[in-house]
Image 1 (cartoon, rainbow, N blue to C red):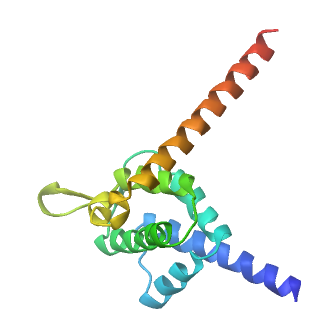
Image 2 (image 1 turned 90 degrees about the vertical axis):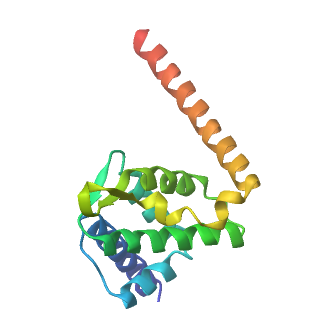
Length: 159
């Protein structure tokens, strides 16, 4: 029973990675697959996989398909809705959604760019001031911890 469960979790993680990375390579999938991927977002370990994938997007990324941009937006909108309506505080995921939404785009006619952020802009999370305060506090804490860690490492190297 445990082996079957672990196998299913691994299969789901692999599927999530394949499909989401595929979207960034402009490979569209069908509505049933979208529904299944969205369902997976209820699980923390699957949101961790999504966090890892989105954190890889650190520079502008052009998608060749508007359908792919919409699918990415649908998955991210669902996660944002979970953030608002359920009590989970995964600020790293929120941060990478923000980062990726500023980098992922599709070009329509006359090279006009449509960014992922435009498809997320009407979501209710943007008016949740408490979520933003907590997110900023969390990210500052991470930055400070990282700076302290780097300083200690530098001091050890200089000795």
